[in-house]
Length: 616
Image (cartoon, rainbow, N blue to C red; front, side, top):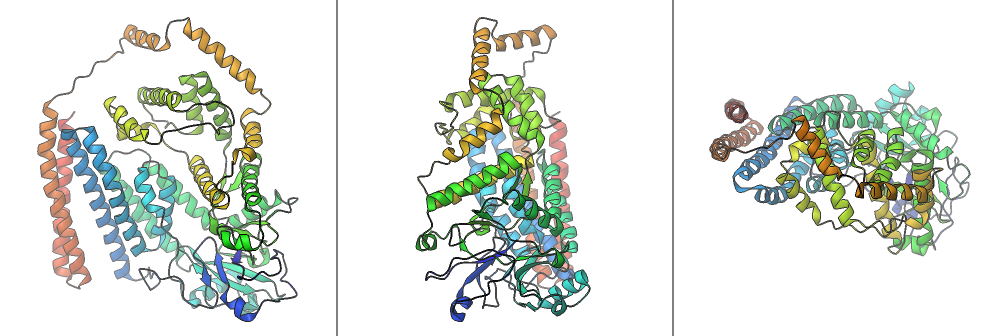
């Protein structure tokens, strides 16, 4: 962690990163007050201004208030039911109208529902903002259009009163703020859901940034995680989606790591040690004597934000070389060291006047697991050999196939996608620069799978996206955005190629692998076709099945859908009315309305159970 400020408009002496503050300061006081300072990738703020960006809620969250806790609980559940019912109606309608009708309306519903969820998250504050951000990057059970609607969430909230920060420091260090620091700014530089950051000076004059966790963050996490888990249970009741519990555990673990400032400090020190001999990459220095598990103090870092192209131009920074430096730095972390900074958005990168790259905010750090490091080369080799069985084994090793997956569904999907992969992607060279993919085929793929009796339930039950892959994918996407902004004409493969070849091939020869693959395909061409062999084997074992659907299912589903729609709309009406009455102070009528919600929910659940029983 380190604080940084955008450089003044006029050229100045090169910025530096050091353990001690500069002995000379030629910056005009007026200019210094107008410098923009930011921390941890949050919104940039003028140092002299005491107020952070405008928020929908102008007051900080007071979780100790019973009224606030009740409001947050009710608002979260109402939004959950509203979103679930919207998808349930489309799903039931699709049983009658067909998969194309259903998928088209699903695609249209995703942005609307994402907006509903985003508004609720912003209003509730607390851990919901952080969880919303995590869901947008790691929830493989959420559609892409839905997750995209959550990616704009900014973890920036109204700051807590200074007395709460002072109390936290008193508890952590056993003495008041003025005895720990020589100077401590009362107004935070930035404030987020887990804590806020203040500028300060140590007794020896060192300029530092101090990140302090909120006083009641443990209680906020406990209550919000409990509510979030119940929401996922509600969703899984209406939609039998696999992976919700796994995603919840991943989110809980990631938040736990972000709350461990000792772990973040260790990550800074470990990653920075890998670049100790690289003069072009820098990191803030952790001040261990002033850091605990709840307070993290680092040297204050100044520089130009990497997304500020105009200031980089004025400073004479070569943007192409800078983009290559960014890619090279991440190749070193991912392919060589195996531990990398997993949140490379532009707010977490600074550039000094000399072109030195500075990385900040190590709350999100990822490690590429051994299974993933071994599985990626195996997957590429199996794809080249067109070996579906090896593809499945490699994907299972990497964690993409659930342990409880249906082997038949997994094989069907992988064979289908492998076939489409061979049609749409032309591996003309190992450079990857000639890979061509048509992104418009995704919708057609879903329809094709639906015709194979493979829906979202079967897909989510058989496949999952491991956490380390999600973080790696998001990191690469963010890096692409940063480098494109710096140099749109840059070809990153020129930098990535040697790292990737070493990572994938190791000591093996790519030509040898290609020759072996060609031999395998030649042998298959003169032998019994593999697909025919599989079907004959199933027939001999008596495992070949023919399925015929009952045409009466559609009529029963339409009847049930009508009843459930009535229950859902009535329940939503009761819920909204009850919430308004509760906020207006009319508790008696509000309780009556909430009772109506319970009644409609009971009827809805009973109808759902009846449908499931009747379909057996």
